[in-house]
Image (cartoon, rainbow, N blue to C red; front, side, top):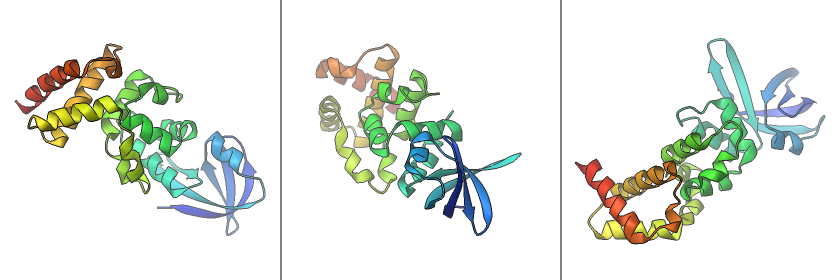
Length: 204
């Protein structure tokens, strides 16, 4: 697996570059923010991810290891391939994406070309808790909205484990957002009732 490339940039466009490594020009797909940060003819190091298909080998390049790791992580979400993952990395910083997922902010993720409302909800559901695997992920944990922290605390005090509570809350949020309701505008007692109902059904 090719994980880094260091060499001279011989060709550069918005979505692709050619980097010369040891006399060989290697084609790498990039996104517009990466392209803007690079200059033709300069030496650079790219953190790369190799995507293998039956009929192709494609390298995707990034300016930091953190972004490359996140690019690979978002592809674990069903329906997200490398092209959409590259768009996500171009539209959101790792901090923005982690914050959007921890706060269950679908509108921030929907701004990414190729991701609709359902796709954003699926990303939140499947990546919740996984961003702490990233090198700076520990700082992301504190971005939960107040209503979610209060609801989690209430469920734990009623005997649910933190994991069960989190699953119940995610279920409620998904259900509400599917009906265009914002949990932040609802009473804690209403949210608790919904979470308890979903918690019981998942336990049973």
